[in-house]
Length: 167
Image (tube, rainbow, N blue to C red; front, side, top):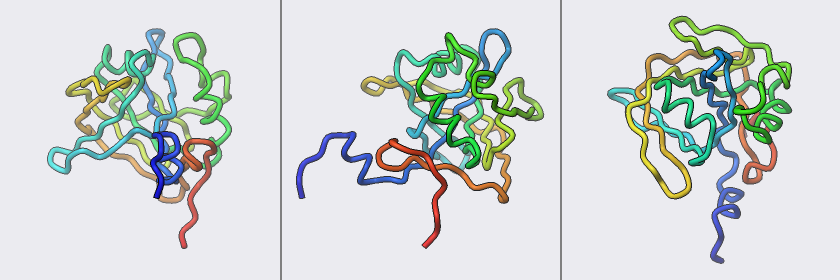
């Protein structure tokens, strides 16, 4: 075995679950940020966490509003997910720019992509600095799923996105 840096290690652990973190922009539109640093944290109560860079517009909006919807995007969004990762929602409406069809979630002002396998609506409980990121610890308000959709994964250390095949 040889010693690896963190980017090399991500290739060895691929595929990684890929999410679009949906947050509410100041103008009421939905911001989308592809993030792989996401995990279930607790069964009771159900909690999830995600880490976003300290300068992240998405992290800032979640900390300001206290609300987030973590989604697993469907495979039709592969190109849009990659495009969303190359710009900031502080300056660009990623939904409009990438022509992403959105749908409402009951009880939330945040919309999600229509092609979504899993949506986790959550409320921020705590933010913790972890190196160059901030970990957002959230209590789940509800889970919504569509088993007929295939979710996307990050492959080759975040170099490409595609669905995963069993076997």
